[in-house]
Amino acid sequence: MQVKPKKRLGQHFLRNEQVAEDIVNSLVTPNPNLIEIGPGMGMLTKYLMRKQGMHFSVVELDEESVLYLQQKYPDLAPNIIARDFLALDLAEMYSEPLTIIGNFPYNISSQILFKMLVHKEIVTELVGMFQKEVAERIAAKPGGKSYGILTVLIQAFYDVEYLFTVHEHEFDPPPKVKSAVIRIVKNEDKKLGCDEALFMKVVKTAFNQRRKILRNSLKTFIFPENYLTSPVFNRRPEQLTVAEFEEICKQLIVNSLTPTQSLPEVSN
Image (tube, rainbow, N blue to C red; front, side):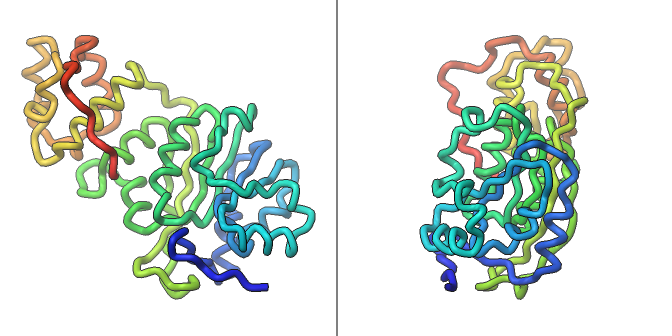
């Protein structure tokens, strides 16, 4: 039985066995729970099933893929979750640390990362295949155009490592862009010294007007007069480190976000 890749699900099946094995070998955290998103025809799955001491499940929305996996890997059948990963309540499903892995559908890859952030107390490692541009954005350093909202929010809690690039011809069907594998590991030493919700508001608001200096993009927030002279306000958001965004939040007068201000939709 063959599974036909479906465009509406963003499926691009990996064909290279060595790449698949390298992705699986990139896991470094011995968490008790492991979940694969979008296994398709099981290119990663067969290597993941060899992992010892981990409760392994796969999440697959495609009915054809689910049927294939049930037939190909009967021992896995009880742990096939035939649902949309984005609709799962991970906090309800898992009480111990969780690792996420997958050749992620590009059309939901950013949403997977935001779900990881929502459940960051549970998800302590993620290894995955992303569109190369997205992978570069997540791993970016301050100062470049790739550095954005997602970069700052993830790096506030996790260490990110760009592992390797994967070319188009390694997939069926070949995507129109290159792909890349990254590893994201929770850094337990990274603790925000400010209110988390306020931190996210400041970061989102600043990057929503990323061409403006912070003095202009953050003018709806209220800061102490003596702090407004800080040189940080003459810089653009992509020039700030996570620690500098944190310091801005520490200086904020609480409840300074005006009731009429609406926060931007996050697209990066």
